[in-house]
Image (tube, rainbow over all chains, first blue to last red; front, side):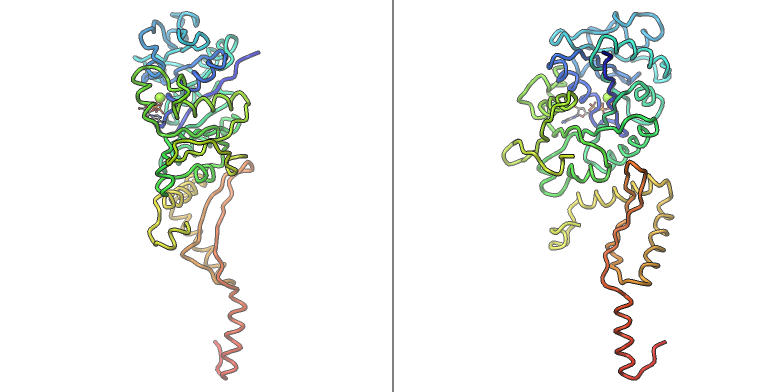
Length: 264
Length: 101
Ligand SMILES: Nc1ncnc2c1ncn2[C@@H]1O[C@H](COP(=O)(O)OP(=O)(O)OP(=O)(O)O)[C@@H](O)[C@H]1O
Ligand SMILES: [Mg+2]
């Protein structure tokens, strides 16, 4: 069976695409799925450091499409999770180094050996974004609960629809429950209402993301981490499990509650 | 605007964020300039106020996305039926023996 290609994208930069790709990759691989994480952010690669695999890069995506390396040679196997692989982006080239047709071919080859291919898209709406979207079977859009990020997410939703992809699903990242509670941050309900898309996960603001990125050990390795747990649940939802959405409550840390308005 | 806002008068920044988002997305989605959308809003308000009294300050405009495409949604709080009020006023005036214009 051919693997599922899921592109993780956003309009605004820095909202957490790379963090989400790495953590969802870890979450799926921990459940025994064969996962390839593909860094499509050519010229600004980061997925390697977030996954802690930067020291093992020999070849990159551009080497593969230009025929200097075979796909198998360029793929880096994660020693902690043998089912997880990374195909790094080139760092010294720019986004025009890869053509859409080359990207499609590359991903087609990956599909034979993996259950999931997670594509970490660059921000924006230019060629890098288009290359990342082209091979996608499914699209996940990441936003933070801020006016500018949500506005740009809306633009991306329109472009994904125009590309005739299935309706994208949304991750709301860096939610701060205390701010939502006092009415100083857009709530999940507000964001979903204006964007009219399906939610696939809410990830709280979590210092653990920074410390785990420092170490190159994604938070989803740790079941006690709030953000790691949120990414694990996103992985479960991708596998078709019906996992309730967390309601984050600041006074008591976290507790599980199925919230009616999020159930669609 | 939320219940708290009305009591304390100070809008929460999340409420402002949502309102601003709805308007900015209305422009983005319809791909028309803010000024044009405002003109459209004003004209619709004028036409509607010929027939009903409305709460102009709280009119909301939104372009909602749905599977069938974009929908322009206006939320217009109605204070009362203008025709009914005018009829009443006219009756009162004629009772006082004055002519209406
Ligand atoms: N839930 C979170 N809590 C705390 N920090 C976070 C969270 N998610 C992301 N960050 C931090 O935000 C920063 C940007 O994240 P990331 O690199 O994943 O974004 P991106 O969308 O891939 O950015 P770019 O558009 O540059 O590719 C990083 O420093 C990351 O550690
Ligand atoms: Mg990134």
